[in-house]
Image (cartoon, rainbow, N blue to C red; front, top):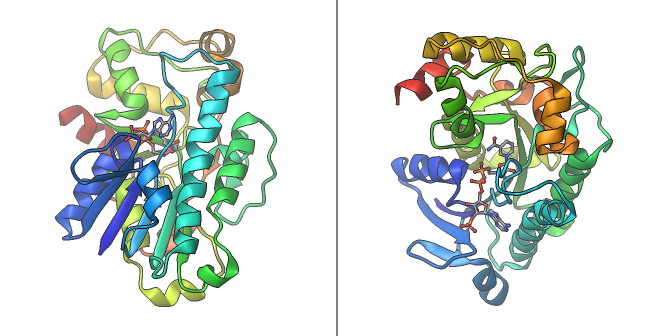
Length: 303
Ligand code: NDP
């Protein structure tokens, strides 16, 4: 299968590219920069969709970019880097003479309202309630294909929690403070911490791309929660990471400090959380490599 991956040069994209190539698929990345194995977003606009059987979008300005202050210009970039690229891909798919069999958008679990008790499956109703949930709403809407194309192209949305891996995402920023013994719970620590190992997220995307064509009968778009089946809190995550690193985790960071440090609209990802259940992901037959925190963290720390 030929797969086109918007943002394929990033943390999740590199893992997905590696997995797809190991399965014998061909990958072309869409990037802002030209290079071998890549096309640019301008190429996509001017020349249209290159021949492919699968398309994925993983593009987006990093939400936890430590170099960006939380202000209007950053918020605008978070929106445009996701919505403009998703729209560019869905429009190119709609205009293609031979559209791909499957189109996967990777969005996020921020659409579900943080709660200590509510559990969310892919079928849970939600309406936007804050900055990040509005972002998810517009992002997923930008991926929708017109009815005529939706008959031949299966539309999939994967909503990941915090993606854990050695080479990017939250872990990359957490390992040093934990190593120095400065790790601690965030906020109350009781909030859910939906997470997934990067290999499993890549696996879910590949599983969606490779699904038999007859699932096109399902109503579009098909949502998969990209989280591990283990439901953990921030406290459990912090303690397990500290235990495996043999480091104390005695410095809690209160929510107000996180809000002041990175802005309350994004601190919410860390200081609050959602209990997200990967119901459809499990029902689809996907087999997790790292279904629990201990196995996921051991792999990351050992690599
Ligand atoms: P990365 O931060 O690694 O970024 C992915 C790619 O997006 C980059 O390689 C870059 O490609 C492109 N990009 C970055 N900034 C911009 C911009 N301003 N405009 C256009 N393109 C840009 O993302 P991840 O791999 O970590 O995540 C993939 C997707 O999954 C993202 O959309 C993210 O929001 C979502 N997600 C990630 C989570 C995580 O914990 N990592 C959690 C939940 C959702 P290039 O430089 O080649 O153009």
